[in-house]
Image (cartoon, rainbow over all chains, first blue to last red; front, side):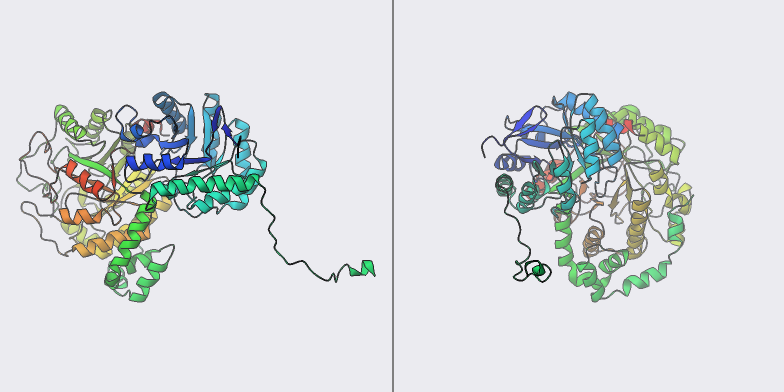
Length: 259
Length: 374
């Protein structure tokens, strides 16, 4: 697909696959997997990197002009901490993009909708490009859009579970209603899940665990790349409708009309 | 105040032991095949009946851990600040009646030890003391945290239990986690092992995690000391404690440690031995019960054991630890709280992990955020 460029805020992306940096067995392997995936937007937990250290191993491996860094606020528990962290990230990493993650629950890392909305509003007013990680809640997505979030990132399943699009019905509503790009984040465990999200009309997907924890993260990065491309192409080509039932030969209820 | 004390009082030690020992292969298979495992499943997994299923447990545990935590290991270092102690604990090298030279680090000494650990690459640090409230009370601890705060992303303590307002104070000044081990959940045996000092108050210790939860601490570390009582019952109660805390203080993260009695000068022989096989079984059982709890292993354990256990469910470890105040740079020869078993250097441990495709993670927190806490 030519000209099928994804635009978020002022940036254009050729790739609709966003990736993460956690859980890899080595930074070099992470780098190679990201390169293989051709991802242009890579999220990094601010708490994992030492922004004061210009030799930081993870940041060192992410220095590549094909890669845009998307710092995330993982670890914060409320809006106040999130805003603080975002400002720290902007100063240290010289980007006003922020993946807003507020999960006060450290067990399932489920996002707090109330604090996320509050933080998004404030961060937008401070000039950030806000990408909020949230539940697949269509109303919340509209509320975030209203306060100026430049995209929404509803989850497909609890983060790290690799279960696929457990929230599919809600994602469909969100995609239908949204005026900002919809990025399906969390729960995507296989390239087929990514393709499914793209076929539904998601604008992009974010994948981390499924690549990082696979036996061969480089090959898996490439597999996801192809799945996202395939899913997007299929969406643009309009899928043929699913045929559920066989056509009925006789018309017992309406045949009287023609008698 | 409602606390874990109410929950614990509904259980009888001997009945619990009987229930664990009565578990059968059928119970173990049920536990292995369950998606959401209960405390009854946990009992089966720590029971003797689970021994033939150890390899299966290990494989499951490894898989779950990798999915949740990735191919990583969090690294931390303990830093002993003081060995002064007003308690008598039958198993501890710092016990009041042990005739050892006592030392509490000065500001200058704290900074020197901290600089040493920082140079080794550590960014997560655990401050440890005995229990001497007059010299090493909350003011001393607060001061120590302030001294090193700018150098470490993540500061934890393992010290005497404190009051809720004291925890709130330390948290607001940069403390991330508190480890407080119950030692044993057997009320009567606890009394025997802690005959004197503030620690002899079983309930005050038992309710410490409740006070921590109320104080909004980011992480609480639990554990029992293996060797005092039967480890199976103690671990069941630790798991019960964990589940209670997770429901009550849902914003807090939890970790479990596995201290086995180690030799020290004038020490106590373990009443109930815990073998390596037992410990592997236990670590896997905790992981199968809870996919998210952090499991930590110290340098108490032997090299070979540590080399293998890193694949089986453990998510954080220390290396090259000294368990005496000033042990890294100031007073290298003084008596340790317990003997270290794995004395390999931080660099060697780091290489060992990398050779097993595990990335040592030195930094996974940002101290600056804590000050913004509510």
